[in-house]
Image (cartoon, rainbow, N blue to C red; front, side, top):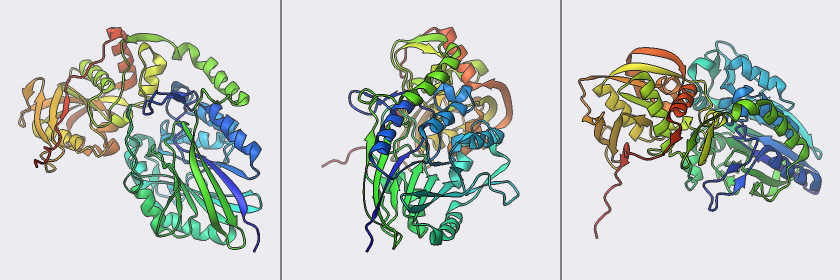
Length: 502
């Protein structure tokens, strides 16, 4: 029997252009974590100390801080080139600037940018390469990229990807595995699928079978996958999870560059299988690591190019402006107030998944708001009956994609009630919702067109596009306010189920 070959896999997912460290608000003490140069420093330390190292990523390299928006994703891809990623799959946010721009990003990448389930509509032509065979330490490793159909159709602005077809990924993945398996020693899948990330200041406990349900199901059905690294959920799998039906290892990090996954495999080349493994998530504490100088120079380059616009002061926050995926939030109130006041609507909404960052206490800059709302979503105005509006509130109260941020409406939600009766009370402008009245409703076009599964807006009539980008509207709103004194106003009151009596 030949001696097993050791292969080290370092992995990331959902980097979201986090060129600089972020405040880890979900960890006691709120340490600073991540940043491209600090990630690179850890990666290069492992490369220097171990012979066979692959660095893989599971998508959503772009969209986050202003450097991504202002360069249409060019800057974060440049940083990944500098880090020396070996392969990545395409994530939904790679399409945030449209299909032609996504093609440019794939061409810019000095690494294989893979996806085997995205096709040009009406054809069998793939948008990108489906797989790549990499060689390391005498091993041949087949790396496949895959994108979830649900993630494609629910988390991308529909108008941006009209030319693409996101196909059911399971059967396609099995085809690629069957094709590669006879020619490689390992099969690794880079996947971007499942339930989208909860955009919130705090965090909650991870349950792999629930939070990665689609990934677990995929790995249990598709035979021949040794390792799946997955993204989209922004949740940590602390140690590799073994899918019992197939033995496939499933891995993921929390994203934003705050952790780099470390996985040491020992591979029997003669039998083409993993004989043992060990893995963990390495926290990237930026106060304990020296930044990699080459990558830090690239960060500084982009910072210098964009600094004048990013650093424009527009207001002051007396306290931190934070998010809450499952309830009312300070940031959500500010943004929906801006929409409602601008449109003179009765009610305004936006999806909680669209709020991508907090704002610390202190000066508020243009760069802060670009990071909070990094999407080019226009504001729409529409008419809805009170009955239709109640359906929107009910869908929101279901919390399948968080609770809609809202202005002009207050509601009481009972999660223990039957679907259809989750909202026990709703007031519009302080008055009970009238199901026969016509209300003027405003929201961003992503949410209005069914983004994140909020399909109840489809019933609206007389829909008008204001041609105003929501982010620009928010910037002007904060400029007018000057000083922000954040407060919660019981717009969304969640009544917990009554505790059982003894």
